[in-house]
Structure formats: C-alpha cells, structure tokens
Length: 195
Image 1 (spheres, rainbow, N blue to C red):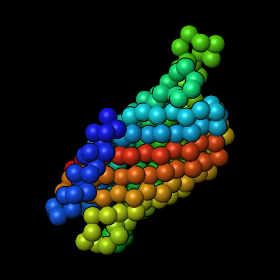
Image 2: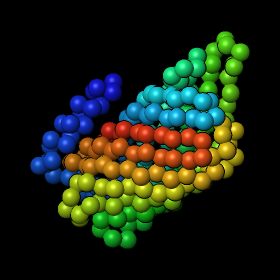
Image 3: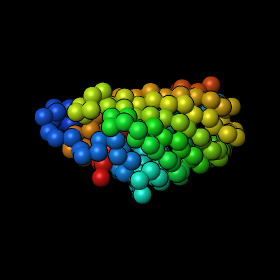
Image 4: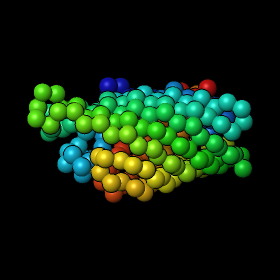
C-alpha cells in the first residue's frame, strides 16, 4: 500500500499543470494515510494505515473523524486509534486559513493473549493550526500548529506541535506532516480528495 501511495503522490506532483481546486484550503475531504509513530510509553514504533473524513458546513464550522490501524514493530500487538471532533476555521486572507479544533480520541493497544493484554486510553485534544498557500496562485501549502492533550494514560504528552507541507491539484491533495510531543513522535503521509 505504501508503494501505491508513493506512486499516486508522484502522479499528483507530475500533474502540476492541472488546475487546482477553486478552494485549495477546503475543510471537506476524504483522506487515506500512512502513519509511523514512535512511542516512549510503549518503547516501540508502530506503523499502519488510516482513513479520515471532514465536512465543512456553513461558512466556518467543520466536523472531522478518523480511524487508524497500526502494528507495533517489536511488541506482539496492534493499535487502533479513533477520533471525532469539531472545528472552526477563518480565512482572513485568500491564501491563509487558521482554525481551532476540539477532538476526542480513543486509543486501544491490543496485545492479544500475551501477558500485556489490552490497554485503552481516551483523551481530548485542543488544537490551533494554520494552512497557508506559498503563493495565492500556487497549489503548494504549508501547515503547522500546536495542541494540548488533556487526560491521557499512554504517556503524559501535554503540549505538542506539528508542521507539514502539501499540495492540492484539482481535487487531489498530497501532504507530509510530522508532530512531536513529550512522549510520541509521529510522521504521516496523506492522500486526500477535496470536495
């Protein structure tokens, strides 16, 4: 699957002559992604795929949800991470959008019949972020922001941040993003369909 995503990304980049979406900073999309994360709490890395959907209604409000399935590298188990949330975005300038988001997460680490069993964590993430086009007429965008994770058992993460780069041509988008917090580092590669 990662080779398919890489191939689609190359096709997307090579299609730079195509027209970009009427609103390349749209918050209505369907997304498939590949995630790798390094957790201090589990002292292991986990990798896998996920889906995310977001729908913007009215002028500024959007709903978002995601489901991810990750396999640990060394531990005999897997992680399932689900989230639902709501956000508010403003587009004060034609090429920049800023948003506030509240998102509830449920993360389950399932180690099967091993002595580790199953562990579950629930938390709320409050985020402030931005998306900005490199130029108003360019498909390339830079993303970034900060977040706070309230109540979390799988490591005391508290504050964190992320940065990413991506592009949108027509309705197809590609993004690479990295995030860091006190006990987890994550890298994501996303392929999105904007509508």
